[in-house]
Length: 464
Image (cartoon, rainbow, N blue to C red; front, side, top):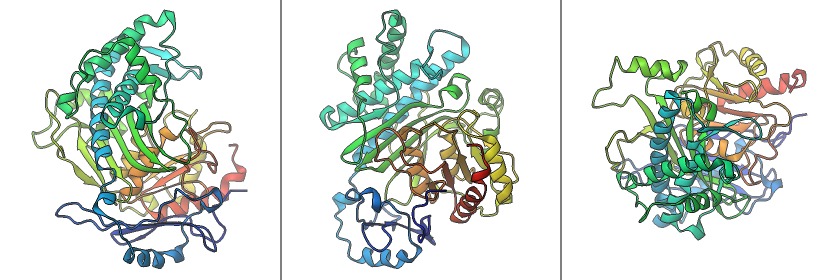
C-alpha cells in the first residue's frame, strides 16, 4: 500500500500563474511553510514571506493542501523580512558557484587524461562502482575552498568519498596524483575570484580536506552536501557527469549548484555519446556570443528562479554574473510531446517499470537515458519534462545525489516528490529515509499527477 502524505491533501505544489506558492501543512492544523516570490526585475531583489520548517516533527511533514493557497496570500501581507534575511545566502551561493566552476575545470582536465589513456587513476569501491582521481580531488578542493572562505569551524560537509583507499601504503602513486591535481586546481583560484593557498598543500593537508567531509547530516544545523563527480561511470566513459553541491539548513535544501561540464547547449546533442559530440562540434565551432557545452546551474530557495552560466574556459576569468541567464521548466503538458529521462544503468533503476508507466500515461518518445544529475538540469532547462527513478529493493538513495537538482527544478518552476507525492526528506542523515517507492520530477503539475496515479495503479503488479 503506497505511503501517501495525506489522504485528504493534494500532493503537489500549487502554481498560480507566474507566482509560485508552496505550503507544507499538517491536516487539521499544525506547522505551515509559505513561500511567495515576487521578482523585481531591475535589481533581482526578492519579496519572500516564509514560516520555516525547522521546528516541524515527522508527523507534520505533509504535502500541500489545495485549500491552503488563500492562506499563503494572507501570510504574505504580514511578512516582516529584512533585506539581510532576504539575502541570507548570497555569500554562500557566490562561493559555491565559483567552487563548482573550479571543480568542473578540474574534471575536464582529468577526463581528457582518462580518455586519452588507461591508467591507475580509476579505482573500484566496495560496491564495484568506479572512483577516480577527480572524485577525491574535487572533494578536497571544494572542502578547502568552503573552509577557507567560510571558516572551517562553521563548515560541515556530507560527501561521498573517504580517505581509506588513498591512505593505503600501496596507493602512494594515486595519492600523489590527487595532491598534484588539487594543487594545480587551487593555483588557478584567483581566475575564479577566490584566494589561492599561500603554500602548496601536502598530502596531509589534502587528506585532511577530504576527511573534513565527515558530517552525518540530520534535521538541525547547517551542512553542505557534495557529490564531487556524480555519474562517475559516465565520467570514465567520456560522457555526461555532474558536480553537485547543496547547502542544507535545518533539514531543508536552501542552495543548489549543479555543474555539468559536458552538457551540450543544443538539446538534441543529449541523445548522442559525448565523444561523438566532441568530434562533430569541432566542425561547427561556437560563435563568440555563445558557448558550445558545459554550464553551471544554480538556485536559492525562495527565489522562484534558477540561473545558468557557461563554464569558464581557457584562461578567462570569472566576472560575476558571468553571462548568467534564467532557466525555466518546459510548458509542455501533453504527454505525447513530453520527453522523459531515466538513469543509463539498469542497476540504478527499473527500465521495464518506467517503460510501462510511460506507456500508460501517454509518453510516446524514446526515453532520454543520461548519466548523473544532468537529468535534473535537463528538466530545469526545459530540455525534458519528466524524470523517473525506481530503484530496486534494498537500494537507498543518498542525499548528495538529489539535493542540488531537486531545489533547482523547484525554483525553475517544476515539481519533485517521491512516488507517493511527498517532498523528499533531507533531514534524516546521509540517506533519503522514508522514500515512497521512487522519485518523480516533472516540469508541470498535470504530468506529475498523471504519473503518480499510474504508479499507484501499477505498483502491485511490479517486481520492485
